[in-house]
Image 1 (spheres, one colour):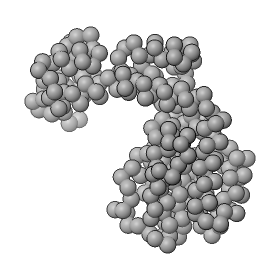
Image 2 (tube, helix red, strand yellow):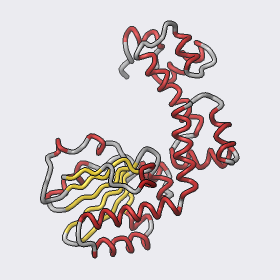
Image 3 (cartoon, helix red, strand yellow):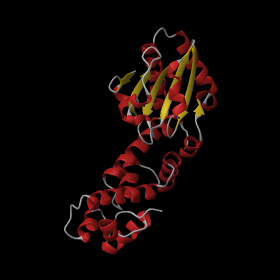
Image 4 (cartoon, helix red, strand yellow):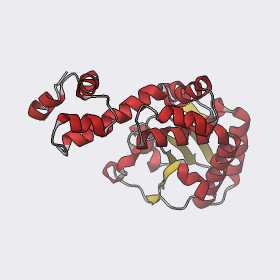
Amino acid sequence: MQQWHNKLDPVLKDFIQAILILDSADPPGPEDLPIFTNGMPALLCTSQNNENRLSLYGTTVPTERWAEWRNATLIAFFFKPFAMGPVFKLSARQLKNEAVGLNRWNAQKAMALTIQLAYARSTAEKMELLQQFILSQVAANQRECAIIRYATDKILENPEADVLAHMLHELNLTERTFQRIFKKYVGITASEYRRICQFQLAFYQLKSRQFDKLTDVAYANGYFDQSHYIRSFKEFTATTPNDYLQFGLKKK
């Protein structure tokens, strides 16, 4: 098994988390698979007897696909959160439902790539072809890729209420256009995503008990007041901050 994190074109480092190669000549056990293989979107290439199958997985690669290493070489490009959709112009809904075969996504591009892979003389050459293919997709969809990457990172970094207005100005987009693009590729609205990020940051502070009063958590994370924070906490957890600190989260 080979695991490559850094052999990436600099442009792709904004979109690809890691590259994993499973070679039938050096088969791993299930426990040897890196933890990031669970729950991360991936482009998977399965090579066997000079035949190459290509699939996009929007949530996670099923366990049975990893079992194919016994008879094949697997090359997986793992995408960062929210990156796969705009790169391949596939909505979050499309990626959530099931694996998307590359031939169903774009038959012409899939055929061209499959022919190139068939003539590759080594796994390294195949990996380079796949990398160039993803680069071409990033270049073709550069604007939407940049919007989603900027917006998700910016909101995560600063999930206060005014962040959306600042982003619209920076991106030079109308609110309607921005919300449409964001929901298509992220699966929820930018406002919903902001509220989730805001809650998550506040939750980390509460959990680590890095505060003197509950109002400190509320104001530090952009809530109007303590009541606003408590309502948000109950919405996401079905309990109050004080009850969580005393009893933990309720089991449903």
